[in-house]
Length: 330
Length: 125
Image 1: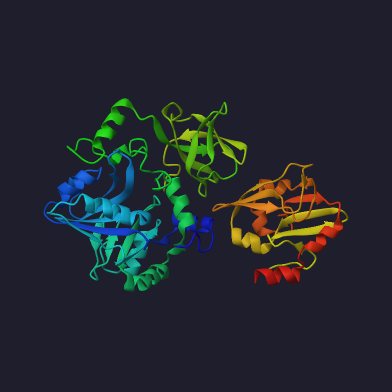
Image 2: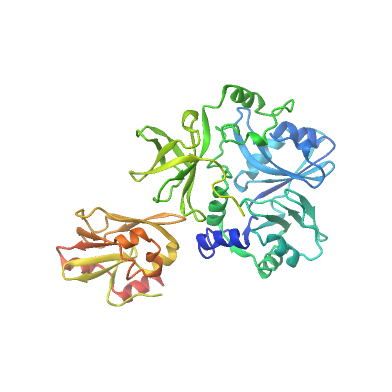
């Protein structure tokens, strides 16, 4: 996927107002099956997989023993004893190794990342585009999973905050599918717009906003962690963080005025100039036309409205801690 | 690709227009097309003395921040307030309202080291 096909701003606005299509073939797909697979996944992932009925999906996290994030992913129940996992491209090998190294005898684990091409159609026109490009095929409800007559996989999920779906098919069928969605009105969009769209929603990007040194509690993803489950990797650390309160929190930060676009690694300062940390992610929000960013900050500086300064090449731009999402999809 | 013949160009895609000892500097049509969607422009302080090749301004698109270099040595004597207020002028009018800064140059011979329109066009095609 290129950074942009035409321009990041144009592609971003296409998704917010019409529909865009992203090539997500780089993402990883695992199939987990076998009689013990649900119980096993519940010990490796933070969310409660038992909440998933057939054809439902959930956002979830895979943690190391220290409670740090290995990867964030979506798990769909594709069968009574089968799950379809979609993981980050850069983490395919590490995720699979982690799962395989904890494998149970009654669980079958397959890495199908090489078999599947993927494309995400996102935007208010996404369902109309699906109906036009895939007539007669079912579009599952929000967070749902379905298969087409030709055995493609359709997931009603995405990374933009808009309605939309992710479509996975064998690589040999990908170009025809892509052309079909384009013909139905989707505009091709690149990595640049993918980043501005996800950050406007406050969605984390693994490697920027998530890391093996940060827990989902610190990342503000407690909603996707079920601490009532009897056991999962990282649970003890999360429980103690939750009871003591995390030392740092991933905060949403927005400029209060015009300024140079914030970017990852720029220093974050208190109003008295004290260095508090660095930006994990930052962009100029095309919808809001102001700088938006996320950073791990000491909890004392994480309250909404806390004034901050973002240092851009030695110049400071005023910002405050705000509530996620930065932008509410219409 | 628009490459006006009355301007000089650097290999790093700045253009320069000389009027007496004042050189107006901006970025080429090719550069703005490559950068796309300029959303922020950071201009140097007036009075700053720069050498040829010094990073003198910053032009930012959504995807990246790019240094803009002084094509020749000189003193910054004027900044474009319009482009600071509306950075998209770099995209819509790169050789006109999208100019960035003016330098007073002490050595007009320095322009001999720059490219003419034909040489710049050849360098980007």
